[in-house]
Image 1 (cartoon, rainbow, N blue to C red):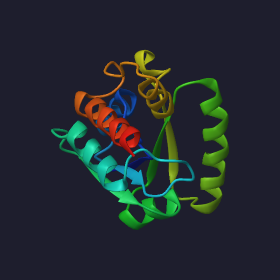
Image 2: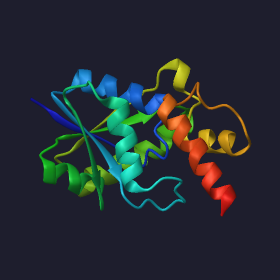
Image 3: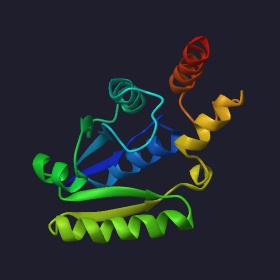
Length: 163
């Protein structure tokens, strides 16, 4: 049984992330959706909030586990016994970024394979950054994220406005 890791910041988790995780879970015996703790970008949600949102969004998929991690993804994959890192490709620019990252990861962890899945057509333009931007400008994001995530984003924006 092959164990895979689907890493990301998931800030916030989108329908595209959920679709990718479910599709990857169909391909691998076990899938760990790995939430990176402190990425080099400004976050809307805490690590605990992001993990909780993912767990709720993916409950019912028996072979998915949601965990947080820090450090290099290939080191985390080795630590938990995964042999594959799953990455999603939405647009052409993603390919170049992911190609470079895959080559670097192969150098660091030659026993870890990278598998890239193409986003579903309806999610190719959806990104967490774009979702936060739309929400911040008062737009409706319910078509791009689960209902509870839309509620959480709205709540975070209200908190920020009150500060």
